[in-house]
Length: 183
Image (cartoon, rainbow, N blue to C red; front, side, top):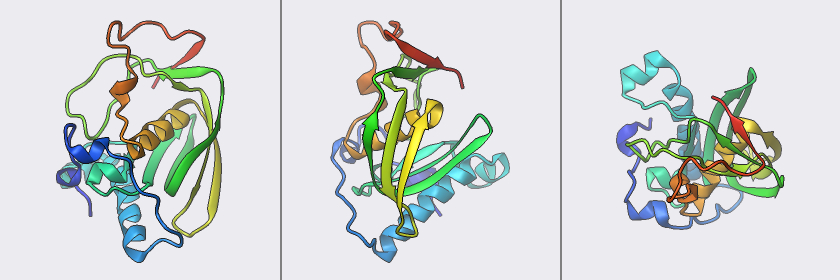
């Protein structure tokens, strides 16, 4: 079972590298790693389990964050009472909206211990394709919070941190034609 000690921190060189594509069908080892990533985000949201195992709550996790340079992400997030719980190999954004969105409270990251204030511009809607744990091709049309979470995790696969998107001169500069998402 993954714990906070398995999650590498900001400044670790792996977080800035581009992850390798996972060959299909995935190896049993890759399937096990991805299962454990999903289990971590699920368990981290359960206060009892989070306390018992010392898990920091998270809604997404990318393999590079556990020092595995492979294109794998796990997301477990609820939005408007709908659960988005996915573990994907080789996820990619295949289309996106022109309109942008951002989390009004800013973004956080399990690999970043201190809060980094500022708006992170993202696409308001994205379509993501990937392969699930059963080897099935998945196509997700996402908007709002789930769209932001998937973009954040896919960024990790490309060595991009959320704060790379923040305007350094004016972190809270309004983002033109963007939707603010409250969480």
